[in-house]
Image 1: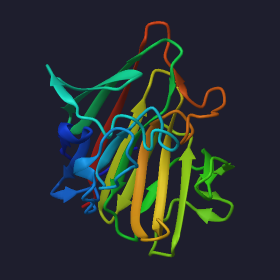
Image 2: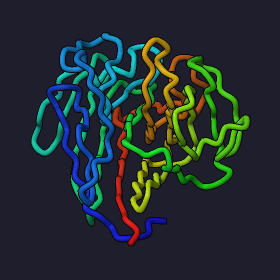
Image 3: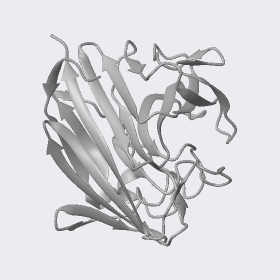
Image 4: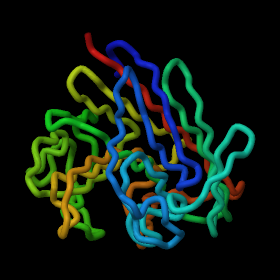
Length: 265
């Protein structure tokens, strides 16, 4: 439930550099975390991921190959009221708008029928150690305790003793998780950010990346990802039935991401 004073949400993107969301503001607060990464402006398709923060469009995979997908490393172009990127196996169209103060991103992916993919709105958020994540208790949760493809299944908010809803100070850990839910709220002080994804009955989830100074091993830093998803795995390679989205005979898949912000008095 969205409670508190609703704040208009504004989004800025960078089509020349992967369609990356470079700003997500509400009530004077910038929600997106950023990091100085000089490689980001120079990437080419197939390059390793260059983590500059913001929100990256990760499709057709997050982990695996291509690293963080095919769209983030390509130039997008304007087309009427949309931003478009052409990748070897698909075309992705994104239309950004506002409705009642919420930021709305409508996506359409076009590919050959039977094409399998996942998508993540890879949002890295600027949050305090006191921030916490609200998801309906008991939601099925897949905890990835390391960088491998194997997960441990549990129930939100605690899996294998890990309290995934709390951030806290740096403790040199880094874990990923995927929660089988269409919506999530991030609370930080009086502010809250609400994210929800709709995909017409296709599998959706919310991915979490809680890096408290544990990654990368040679030069760790803190970053917190809260990522609405299509699909239910980080890597589409070897994914089971129902864990990816499959393009239907029409050749198109459409979905919507809605982002709302509120503030308590």
